[in-house]
Length: 195
Image (spheres, rainbow, N blue to C red):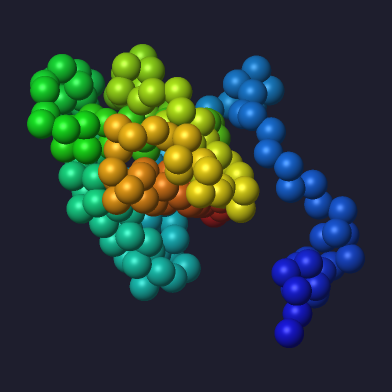
């Protein structure tokens, strides 16, 4: 059985051992943000991917819908009539618990994408600091950027305000948001080559 490093060398070549896999914060002074109004999953990525593999595009779309809507109970800002006002209203309403607050879950999704350079134009990013406490933001960033290093201790550092099930929901949202961000970047580059 081949190790991960051996498989990487087999498929990528000898240079694979020289690949630097350390995480580096997204620097907006060095890189441009990818704006979701210019290139989004539903409007753009899905079409580019379905050009090559329609079944895969459908499967990924279903996964993102499952995580964003069914797990979080949230609605995508890009699918609502007025994302900024609905987010503001959701943030100001008082749900029974934070895990019932759609704006809370949406803040996790957009924060996970923002830390890798994806910006949802209609989202009011100051709400991230209102809705997400620092230990939770640290956890989301670690899951989205260095998931191989997440430990039980990271779950515990989030505190007692979320149930264990909700902590798993946070992790799922962060991972899927990162996966979608990677697809957005990759399929955006492919779409530019297709033109």
